Every structure is written in C-alpha cells, then in structure tokens.
Image (cartoon, rainbow, N blue to C red; front, top):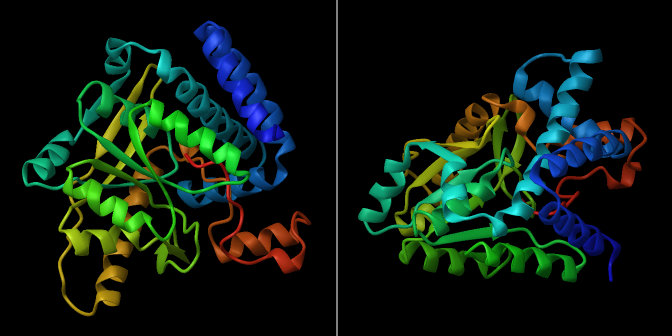
Length: 314
C-alpha cells in the first residue's frame, strides 16, 4: 500500500476511534511538527498570510499565525474524518449560516447554484449538512491526485458523505452541467488554478490565474455563482453565502469570462480576509511564489513554473 494512502487511512481510523477532546489535542500536537517539517508549505502559508492580512508579519506574530493556520488545517481533516460517525442532530448543531436564501432562490428558479469556495475553514461539514440535514444533493469537483489509489480513497470517502464527486478533467464540465440541471449545489474550489491555463486576474494585489470554470459554466447554464466560505468557530462552523455575482453577456465570451472571474477573485478576497489564518492554500499560486521557492532553496530553478504542487483536494 502506498505510504500516503496508509497514512490517511491511519489518520481516519484514529480520528474516529479517539474521544473528541483527545483527538483534538493529538491533532494540535501533530500540527506543530507539520508546520516545522513542511518547509515549502510553511513558506506558502507565510506569504499568503501577508497577502490576506495586508501586513508584513514577522517574528513571533508570523510564527503564531502560521501555527494557527496549520492547526486549522489539522482541524479540517480531523472533523472531516469524524463526519460519517455523527448523527443528523450533531451535524445540524455544528453549523450556522447566513445567505441560505440565495441557494433556495436558485433552486426555486430551476438551477443548482455554483458555489465559488476558497480553500478555507471546513466546507466539507457544510456539504454534509446539505445532504444529511437539508436533503439537498451536492456535486463536488475535486482535483485528481497521485497515486490513483489515494485519490479513489478520497472519492469513496466523499461519496460516503452523500456527495456526487466529479474529478477535475475533460469530462467535468458535462458532469457539472448535469448537476446544475438536477438542482444540485455544485461546489467549486476557486482560489487556485490547479490545471494551469486559467484566466488572468488580480488577486490580493498580484497578477495570477484563477479557474475560468465557474464563469464559463454560469454563462453556459444560467446558474448563479454564489461566493461562499465556511468558517471554523470555537464551537462549530459558520457558513457565509454571498449574493449572486452579476453574470450576463456584454462582449466576447473571453471578455465576459475574464470580467466574471475577476469578480469571483474580488469576492474570494473578502471572504478570506475575514479569517486569513483559516486559509489552507499551501501550494504556489502566483508566479512570485515559484520564484520565492527557488530563492529559499526549496525548488531548483527548472521547477519554478506555474501549475505545480498538487495536494490532497479539499
């Protein structure tokens, strides 16, 4: 068995077997080691915290913020692994929300909304709440990862939470369109251009590319794009669903997709700034990130190019 797959299976088993307080303490302890050992991810977290806070964090302030981000990421996995064992009432009690009327309105109009989500907080809890408590089907688009056995394990895990899982790739668009027409809530992680070839936008004051899929699908289907984030709270989670992004044809398809994707980027910035230490984007996302990795001796110059650094899909 692949070591990564074995590690995730072990983590899942331990998370479910231990009492919640002990599992949380173990996760916090593990996050300390992870933040020190994973130098490349640590550097990306440092850079993203500076972007999202707008502050030149250094010293103790930076180390504390980085540690809280790794703890938040550990909490995400711990809670995700424990979700299948929770009762309906426990799942319901663990989520508050605002803006749910935007989902209801889209479905009443005959569409499954396109949820533009950042790698932040605990979106999986909200997705499970939709399927288990609200009885609303969910389609989630996820990035394929290596090895295939690990990816299949993640797919089966999410299916066990009631989600329809669509691997990112050439067939994803058709699957998502079917989900929209069936009035599924469609979850699209939108703050990173995983495949490359995305739409150039300004994101946190720097030029980079973000996926054009949400804008393209919205123009193609008429479904609304709803920016959304699920924040960790001391007890439970709070889901914020923003009003629909304006989606209409004004020029060429490329011009419209670019304009709408920039709107998505601006909305995601605001959602992330509300809790920057819960932003779990730990892979290079801007051209300057790749240069920083080379300067830190963490990547050879030949590897300093966009579109790298796949990590387990959230």
